[in-house]
Length: 624
Image (cartoon, rainbow, N blue to C red):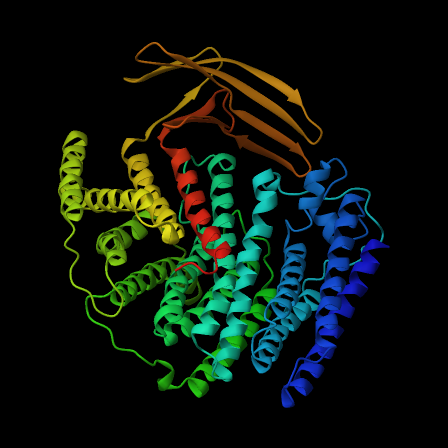
């Protein structure tokens, strides 16, 4: 019954889209005020999709295996929390969640834009409904979450065990809030361009949506990174996995857009940048949807492997791109870029330089992600692009980018001289001396490492000073930039000082190295609701004689039948001690991986600080 209600609610939601478009087009011709029927209709559409989504949740909770989606992604022994999160832990359910966020966001937009021009509001609604209808058709035609199975199976196939995790349960909804928020930015910018409303007032209005999307996207990426760190047992926070890259690309574009919106709001400049980036952020979000759900990417994160679905998204995506480019070319006027003169040394120029660097970083990630796909299509040659590619292309350009980021906020609008503040010189000398000391102490490659460490320390010292000294009105910028410098510094020390041991051990064996002694004491078994757990007990002793007990785990799930490795992590403010154990086929010993990862917690804290800066800016609308 819940599935039936959910299906018909989805159909009624799609019909409501057509009704909204009809009234919107009719209203646009005589746009003195918004038609009184439009707000109730957008609310009704949201309610229909909400009922549909709740119907799917009820089907999962009740283990209704007559529903194909429930059968494929659930099991009666699965804990209630993972039954609920399994609703969006699959292709069909995640598309329904997209629709839920899309319809809720446009309803909120209509309510919050009451002081904006009527034609602008109507056109934004129309563009958004085109996107919503596309997702309705996609969901109903190729990805229905309410397909019926007969005869009804006794049990379901279960959810992938590595997805049965609290962090990953909340990761997709938060990430989708970021992705779907870019659709409002996209629709709003096309609407504003069409009615010639790209202005300071529009920038103030849309900045709220840009910051909201950026905050949720940053949090979503953070949760995914934390999950990968402890659940996949890779022992790191970022691996340039294709699906990780898919979420990073719109983040680059959104970050650049935030800075451009600030310039447009204060100086009425960079309008072309704002419109192009608004289109690009949504295009990249949609491209991520295509890559994840078409099966062309091979990743633990991917949901689907269906060419029909991929083709639909690809056609839909190209249609939206052509529509947006046509509107940009046809309606964009050169006079929009009014007051476009500023000095070579100015805050505008520094933001423009950072924009180009961000676009370069985005291009590197885009090429590294899609090149293997095109190579496979053209020559059937399969390759994977890993961290060395990204490090070699990004790190050299990261150096001038960080210098511009350190000096840029010290410049004035329109025209500025070089800042003559003594502390900038003192911090620079201190940073160089510190980097030389670290590089010589570690005996690593001198030139690139000393320069990179110098500029990161330089940014860190400057932002640390600003964090405590600068006026409170720019506190959000201070905390974000300081968080970013702390993030880079934590990454550098994490990479430089990480130590690792990989060995094979049986119960009773001891491994000795120059720094550690690892004793494999015993194995213990536990029975949980939907898996059996094998827990290893290891005693790790360092050179000072200090001992720590590490208890990594293997889980054997009943449905699907799968073995996963659960890392055991001991965290403090200085480092993480990280251990995993894995089965070795046809052997009686286990593969043990032990790592000490310095400053891991500061990587997470710094990203939270960056996000906090965005939240403060969002809450303080009148910040100078």
